[in-house]
Image 1: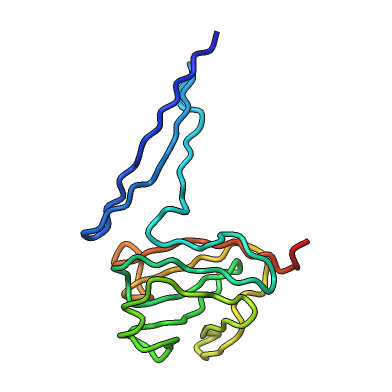
Image 2: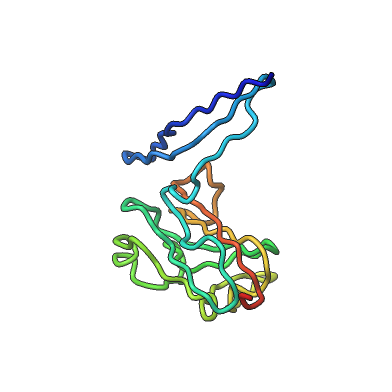
Length: 162
């Protein structure tokens, strides 16, 4: 006879003076923990919805205290810069960006700057099906562990919703 224990609770995520409670549930059996479920969409940075199709938009929900830069990495590992505090890429003034609580991203029209062999180019970001990393950092060109950063993902389908 198998005994199952369900543990429900909240995981406290502390981030530079602010905290978020993430709900979770764990199911344990005789052989240990079988499943851990967390509501990732409740994190400090999130996409709503987290799955979009060609031509759709999503909202990037941003915590009150957030990094000053914004970049998106596509499924082919190309980085697109939208708001670089140390560069020329700006979707808005830095002072306006610092007050941002959400940002509507239209997959049909959002463009970003990227580099090929040292040459800057600009193009539409959402072109391929797959997971896109939305990355915010004070220093976009350094490792995440060396700067204040937040990230989340959105899954994009390059085909129309059926």
